[in-house]
Length: 352
Image 1 (cartoon, rainbow, N blue to C red):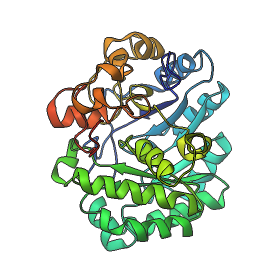
Image 2 (image 1 turned 180 degrees about the vertical axis):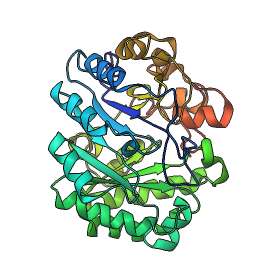
Image 3 (image 1 turned 180 degrees about the horizontal axis):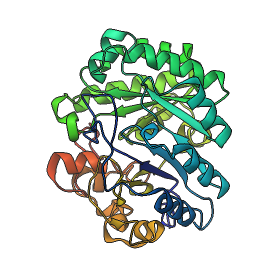
Image 4 (image 1 turned 30 degrees about the horizontal axis):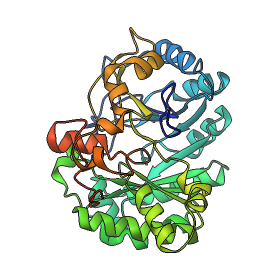
């Protein structure tokens, strides 16, 4: 079995506790709504799923509670405590609203949260609030970042990468540094949900952006990574070779620990209704945690097993010499062609 295949358990479980949210982000994957849905998992069902995840062979998955806005769930702190008590790492990805108060942050800190993340989609209120759909969100986000860092909780900043936000990435990186974040994750747009209204980068522009990221990541005071752009790993290796360093040096750094991880391979998503999918951007269900063990669905479902065999992917992704460490975005392949095993159109590389 390849060192880049995570066949027994996911490394990360992204869990949409609710689709309810007070923001109206233009790129929202979840098509979030104001009120909680009646089909959300109950507190007891959530605790049962956490217990199942904790029974993983080897290292237990890291759980990221997301949404919508997980703060819309009054049992959020209880669920963080339940996960931590079972030996799981638990992070929270809240929306930057007025609900993210000093008391809310410290309650999560006391519950044992491992990290928190906030989204910043530009270096100014005009840019960020234009994407988020709510005036004042930029200021709330900066205040929330200060509270999180002040509480001693590691902070990750997530930034959308699209044609609208790419020109501002350099300034956004400077802001991430000023906020004293530990990590910056650049999410490359998938045209699903409300994100269909935004414009993706071209493959050539994406390649240029990834090379910019790879060149600069080592000089920033935070770790930089990508979401739904696994070809960043290829770019890192190619840049390493161009600079005359060994591949081993590239593999040794913290930027490369995610080699091989992609939708369905090291990643699993649990929707608010309990449906299990390879990621939040790939709405193909393998089953529901109400009736199935989530780890069994991850290990045994035909969908997940297919996503862990990149040699059978179609087009350039299957033929690519980097398919084990990359494999392309399966969500983007599906969004572009309806074929979950198809090639990722955002990658410019021609396999040789």
